[in-house]
Structures are given as structure tokens and as C-alpha cells.
Image 1 (cartoon, helix red, strand yellow):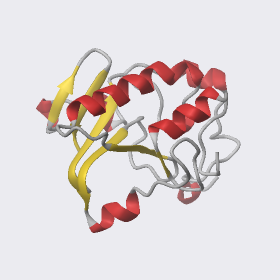
Image 2: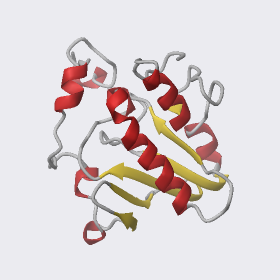
Image 3: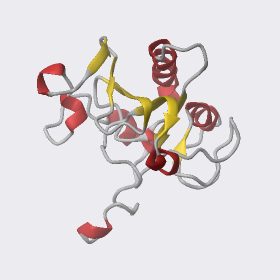
Length: 172
């Protein structure tokens, strides 16, 4: 496939469930999120052995955080399977802990080809979105069932995975 079309799925780029399990848990020189630290300019606000949270470099809301697995578990939400549900729950719980107000923050994942960094990352928002943020992070569908959009909530992902399905841009 020509490089300029590489953002579209092809038979070569589709992964199997086995591939998703084998995904590298080592750092990749090509993945900027595999090297997140305060020392390389990230505004890290939380880290433990499993997760890292930091401020987005181009915030699209009053508070815009990213929560990532420390290790390269998956390049995107498309690669997640049922066995990743505990990881997702940890990411959701951390998001709720980090946002200072009492309401549950808006959260979600971009679905490729609409994601910019190939390392699983959860967007967490609090406060009003910027003009661009309203268009870049739209939620479609209901609370539990995904619509046709490119931004999916953690609940929609969990519901899809509990059904043994994978996340895509189609209705789910």
C-alpha cells in the first residue's frame, strides 16, 4: 500500500488476537509515549508501575490529561481485547482520581486512523472544551453503545470488549 494511504486499514495492517497479546511491552524508539518522563519535557502529574498521566501539550479543554500504560501494550483502542479490561478499569479509576471536581470527567479514545500517537492513550477532560476540542472529541452513540464516530468512551469500549468484539469506527 502506498505510504500516503497508510492511515487506512489493509489486510497487512489488520492484527489477530494473538498479535495483540504478543505486542511489545518494551520501549520503542519510534513511539514518543514509550519515553514519557519529566526529563524529556512532559508535564507528568502521576506515575506508577502500570500507568503514567500527564498534561496534553495542546489542551482542548480547561484540563486535558492523557493517561497511558507505562509499557507499549497496544498502539490503539482497536488492538484491545477482553483481557485488557482490568487495564481499562485502572485507567478510568485514575482519571476519576486526578480530576479535582466531584463529577465524572469526559473521557475517551480516538480510533485510528484518527489518532496521532500509536500508543494507547486515554484523553481526560474537565471544564469547557475549546472550539477545536468540540469537533475533535465528539462522542456518538449512547453511554454504553458506540455510534459511528472516531472518539469512543471507556464505557463504550468496555461494553464492546465484554461482548468479545473489537473497537472500530463503525457502529458497535
